[in-house]
Length: 320
Ligand code: DHB
Image 1 (cartoon, rainbow, N blue to C red):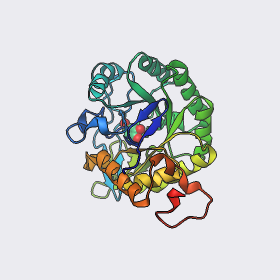
Image 2 (image 1 turned 90 degrees about the horizontal axis):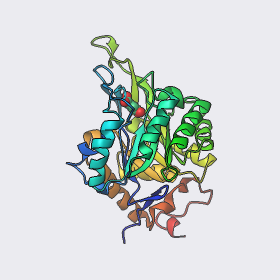
Image 3 (image 1 turned 120 degrees about the vertical axis):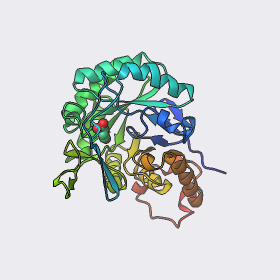
């Protein structure tokens, strides 16, 4: 019998816990020729802002060992185009949609939340408090617990109560538990951990930064241990809070690691760029991992790495 893969995103039930993370699948259309978007747990949109935005100058990508640096700069069509074109398309395909939002001001985050309140079919809102590439948006909010909490409160206050709010946090802070706590105290229903780490590469041939914007966000397998650590720490502090674990997930085993650390859903991001079918492959591999250890319900393994109980032999522990 295959394991029961259902996961909960607030009031919405997902068929499985493997989500397309924000930023690597656009608004979902780009994935559709490779995967059935209705079979992805949920599609998290690239962060949308109020106005269309062209983003940063090129070059915007640089490869590093086990990672990718990007400096996209929140390129996007703006909320009107998203609501008129992208959201209806995703819903028509049977996808569950999480809308990621980014603002330049607390007021913009609130305004985006009000716009989304009027739209049917939004399963959750993810607040991007951690864009590394826009001095005017994202990151400045997520580095300080007080400001992060203010943004969350503005979004929560402007959004329909039945739409859950997840705050996506930066790992580039001294104490991620403090930022997580402030977001939860301000009304976040869950957390997305983690966004990229701020990084930089220099091209020896030109002796100049590889990215036009000099710095960029580091993603991919290189950051997975950081994601596991952050999920672990936040789960220790807030055991009941839903976490979308994101950061360098490439295989079903990687997804399993984040679930064991305490995530109840897992985002696949950078892996999509070289394997556009990564979400369905990771799901299949995760099902195989669970079958191999005899787990009946994926929900049962969430946070199991925290258990103080002595570890039983593989294959027996989960049935106990
Ligand atoms: C961008 C935003 C992000 O939140 C991120 O993690 C990486 C890149 C951007 O659009 O620049």
